[in-house]
Image (cartoon, rainbow, N blue to C red; front, side, top):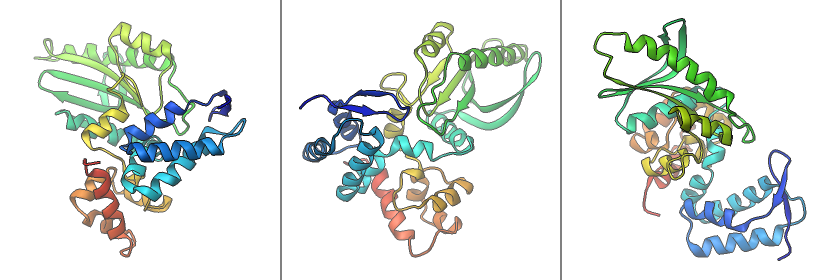
Length: 280
């Protein structure tokens, strides 16, 4: 096949790489035969300058016809963007991610620094370890976190840490700063974070330990993955603090509490169960 240039979300172009499509379908749990079918179908649709978004939509459309569960997992990246437009559901999402790692968390806390007070997105602690977590939510995937973000967060963290370590009994505890984004960091931001010991967590960083890996491992698929929900219904659930498919899986009644149309409740519940079910 002759090389075809595709247009990315940012407007940049790059050569189409089928292995990327195959990889994302595989990580969503698609079987080899489904991957082959979709890859062939996308190949037939290719033309010079086609948008990556159109390729994604075509793959998603076909996946959805074959398996809602796999389609929901494939939609993960888009589903994180749908946690917007405010960053609040994303903060709740990050908080729950840390809860699953055994941390106790609080969101939207005013914390006293040595010099000034800071509003911190998530404070987490476990045993002798304290985390100050800043969440950077973006509505568009081309918005990366550049080096200014960890630079700024590091200075806030140091101000808070100075105050924390002056508290009785805090001297021997571990204090760490985190920055979490639903998109990506620039390579400068990653290098700086590594250099100063600031933990950076993005869609696919650190390798094999990014948000996409943690969601799959911990079964924390956001409700925005569910294709049986329309935009309005997703908002209703997020407004009621129902952020994860697992919450619906655990208690179907939360759908009623969020004023979801009773006729749709069983369909939505069934899809949530499918996505939460680990067996591909």
